[in-house]
Image (tube, rainbow, N blue to C red; front, side):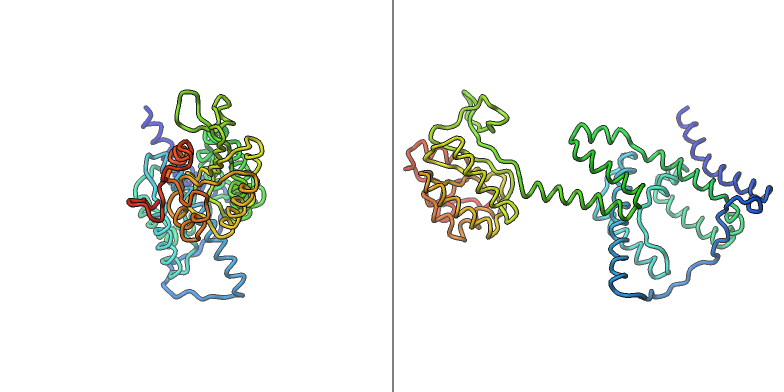
Length: 378
């Protein structure tokens, strides 16, 4: 029953197009003031090298605009419809396909090629689900440009709009908006702004608006990341944040400070201020441990900020220890000489090792990334 209904829907689009053309031809709708598609260009395109015309700045803006629209439309279309069909998508392969198609289109004076959601929806509604759907579409376009230009020119614009509108209804996934609301209200806002922007101010401006808002939000996350003081739950050794687990107990004479981002020029001053505020709130303490488990890079500005933090902590009677860190982060601290200026003269591979070092009175030899045998590079 379901397959029968689906087949009826798939053939409905073709029947609607043929019926609209027949009605337009019999009643001469164009003479009655009904807008039709009109005369279509005929003939197949001939290969030729493209020519660049116009000022370079306007050409560059046009190229960037086409790139932005093609990327947003193509990848989102592939992901959306691929998910519905249970297919996996590879964004890199999709972009390679778009690039090859656009090179071919450019050699034949064609339009920019991308994955159009409306055409994809119409194709799926007509039953196209394999690569042969594209081949069939190409053959039909070739026929339309050679022998079907006059019949297609009689198609009323309203009928074409109705077909696209019905296909667009299938694109509306309100469950996805509900899912975004459950995950994060900010993502729901971005999705709503993107949808409203495309409708009210145009596709290009709408896409740029949504991308701009997303970049601003990412910049905000990088500039003011989350930070917290950590402690241990009673009877457990693992560390948790005190704001999420108020029952956790801080380690005596120690402030364990977690900063959830890699230090950079965007957030280094924020890191320094938050660290001093944590010491003021939970101190006085002899040891201040920077939990770097979420850090994998640090730039020169952040190194200066860490040096300033080390000096400020020293004036308050606290020694700075750095625990964790991945990839280039510990290596940069070592090569810059910052690791040698720490009280302990070394870095710790984990927060637990730093705590053991402190519990042993600061006398046990911690893991030194500069000279310890078997030191791991993260």
